Length: 257
DNA sequence: GCGACAG
DNA sequence: ATCTTGTCGC
Image (cartoon, rainbow, N blue to C red; front, side, top):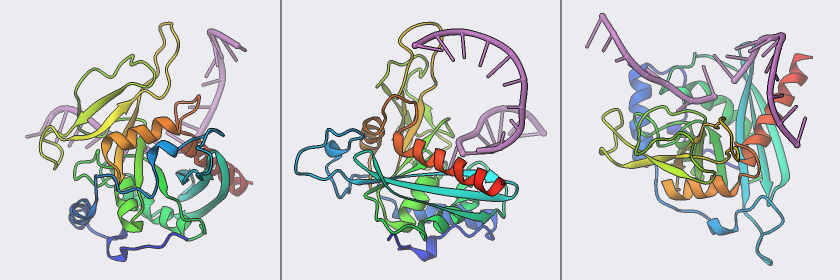
């Protein structure tokens, strides 16, 4: 099971805004934006194409749904595309969504869900940013450091930072580096993530918005994007995230009834 | 004061 | 995130 390694860095929603921001600077200090994985990124796969003799790593997707003033946090763990465990937790929400402080609203519910999990994932995908954050401590980084697990942030839109090129109409598989600017604590020009075109229409006037991928913990910007692309198959969102998304929705409808 | 902002 | 009808395409 995944255990909390840094209880001192847990997202306490009762902190003042200043204390939250200060904790985020501390988390960014502890975060490792370099590869420190327990597996070879090349063996990541969603299909039955893994290298013979080697077991693909355990990958977890985390997503949430909401019902009234409660959050449903779902975690789905899979290996080589096969689901091996899925859990969820329902938690009362205490604070509203504030850009830059997302992990203090949703972090507690996620920790609750991890307490239900028995598997130990080699990699965790979170919905939201990692290093692409004002203080380089988005939810993927916060959770990654608290559990000391390699993590990646997968967001649908850009929180901060500046793309080095246009991100419209990219070809499937393309990535555009996102650099830190004055809004981010990292030195200006640091690559803190990528806009990633995981899916695109063959032709026509329609275009799909790219995903925004950034390192959470123990992964660098290139590896984070390589992993997300490898875990994607036919849809905009990577499979682990899609599964968690679907399970969080399913759990919500169970509660609704 | 203005602008801008993951889920 | 959530709410929600309509529409395009396979």
